[in-house]
Length: 264
Image (cartoon, helix red, strand yellow):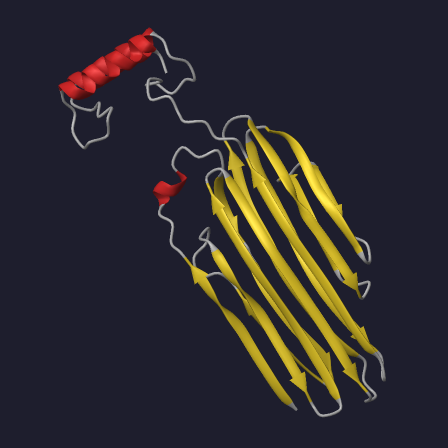
């Protein structure tokens, strides 16, 4: 039997901790991955996991086998990214089996986005996308947003040969959340059959972002005299780099004063 296994190389771009400073979304777990396998007269599998958690990920898994009588193929891809205000995923998979031998043939692949994140304040959000599947009924695509240890906020699963639009809005209360999006293609063929399956998903979870007001010195959500007094205290101690040029001096004082009198 000739078996070809190819784990598609991941494109990984590192993101330092500063990428997530003062972010609406703070990420704590990253289980994005692509897997593919086949079974019947023999078996094999391949998978790929991004090497750097929370970094942009482009990759997939691809496996193919041919013994001259039976043929298997399973291949999936994923392109996904996380940033302080949004997360996106585009994934799909295809599975195919055919043969005249005596064995039941199975090929399956999964492109999975599985991320855990938190919000520290009430955070408005939009969850939008498309999920679809066709072919073998064991193929599926789904999306689920839930509060960890709590209720499921939104859940959608395709049925055979359907395309579904995902469109949800709401406000996330402070807490830890899980977002799982999957596209699984599967093909199961009995002796003499040819079967195929396809699944895909495109998803974005985002929150509107406003430019933070640098005048809110004590970060309590309002701008008032306590911010001004706090700035003066820090300025006198040499820790009030308002214009972020690397030092505290009179320029910081006059810029803060001018903006404070004019408002954000």
